[in-house]
Image 1 (cartoon, helix red, strand yellow):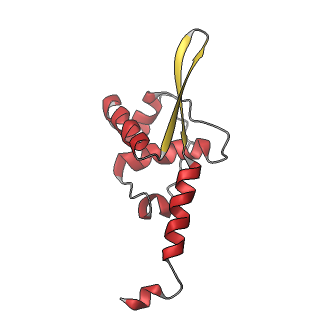
Image 2: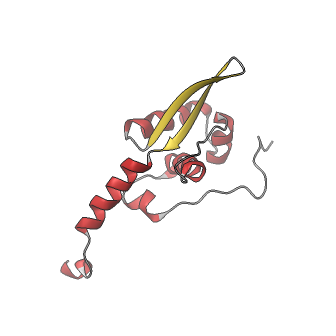
Length: 117
């Protein structure tokens, strides 16, 4: 069963997700999917837990744990809302916080700093 995942669906892992945010494994997958939906600063991931579960090939409880952890790290923001009398949840990457982390790292990196080791 595909749970809404088409053959041409994809997500992208960017180096800073590994190097700066230090994400790995399924937590990285969950974050990368949310980022892919919200990187424009306006959109959000409103898909199901099953969608994330299927891409990460893990349990729904584990996906929920990753979502909580990503929120605790301030990498992901959660928004609850009601649509058609049903409580729903949306997630988006915390672009302001991530940008701050990337700028801080850039300030520490200088050309040829790899030669100092």
